[in-house]
Length: 306
Image (tube, rainbow, N blue to C red; front, side, top):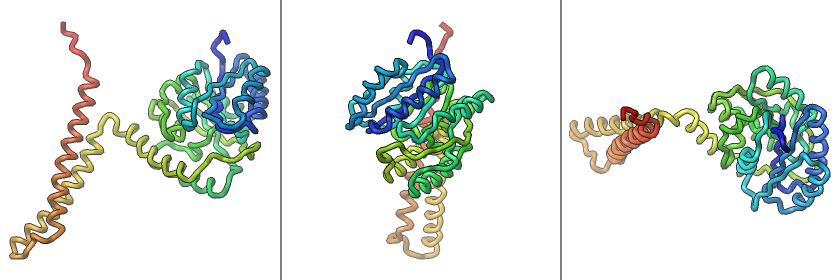
């Protein structure tokens, strides 16, 4: 397309050959009724079914459709990262390729975006998923809101609308696609949620697995570190060192009192634990200071006196 599209809808797809045809057809109709310039980008994340051939057929039917095929299944975060690198649009819409996201709800997201927000998530008010997935998702969303400090009840919804510049500040890997709102908020963008209709899958089966919950939790810890302590690592590492030092010093003080009153301490585990904690405390403090020094040196302005 010669002009930058007003909106690009990105669909990550993995083995969605049964769904992708209907999803693209419905989405194209929704975009065509709302925008003069639009495109759809499907990222085939290493599908092993007939998804590639279906996309070829759809490409002949819809000239605004593009597709990227990854050589193997890298995961949703990598698929979105590849899409963001290939997209130049005023607005970017994210939808899942299973048909559960309703393109007709784009108006709600657009209206909220026009209120001054930079990223709007479609909150699934009534979810059509398995019970286990709903329960784990509720726990995940509560934990994410508490740890990240960003308000939200459906961070992992695949239905999102954002301004094009937001995607430039999202570096996704692992399971980071689950934390797009906190990452955008950390970059200074305003985020919000609106209730949207959520539907049953058109066909196929969910790619959700229990292992993704634990991987997502570990990535949440990474997000917390990156968004809170990226410029002040000593606040985290030094605090841990201080805690170890206090506990270790307390144990050694206790052992010293026992020894001063004539007791034997050579075989007491508390003595070894106290010494170990004090040593670890010194190491953590020094490590934190070195991390601060590295950040200071990387951000120091060059000498322009010459």
